[in-house]
Image (cartoon, rainbow, N blue to C red):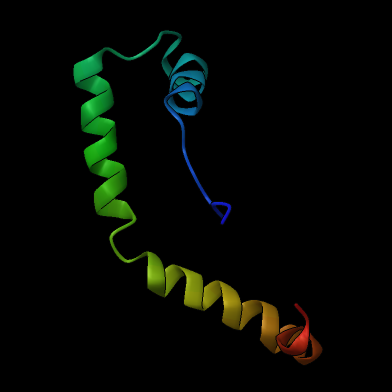
Length: 65
């Protein structure tokens, strides 16, 4: 099964380069990972809201695969 969402180290380093003009150290990357883990702890709620938003605007989508 494919992932629906993933964030790679490369993604984070690219964002860091855009935001602070440098790459993050291994320690900084581990802190970012902890923050992402905390932020995504409630991923089921976020996914449910997304599903509800999609299906409430177009009920026929519920039956598509």
